[in-house]
Length: 106
Image 1 (cartoon, rainbow, N blue to C red):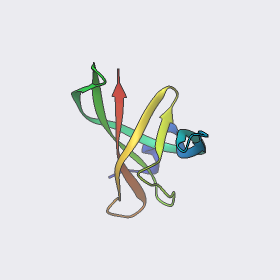
Image 2: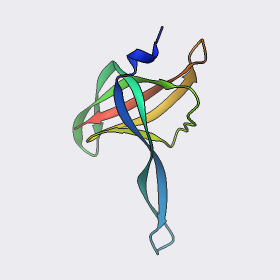
Image 3: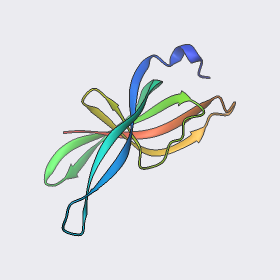
Image 4: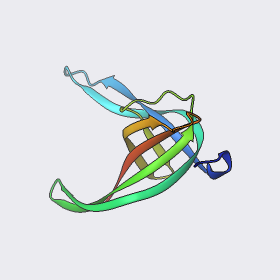
């Protein structure tokens, strides 16, 4: 069971911003929405090949206080580390939001 005192990391919640590229497409960047206290726990890691490079894909469980609106398009930033949201659910007591996120390590 998670307690408020377990949320010891500051993460920046980011939302996508699509900018018209002038050629009928868009360029996606991210803008900070808010900074949250969170608990970040690594769950598993596996090798991942993308664009002909070998990297590791690490899955984390991120827990934040309930009440923040999260979508699958959001991501979290911890300095240079990026955590892409894969799924999320309420904790059994509905006091927290438990997020499964992936971090790619090249």
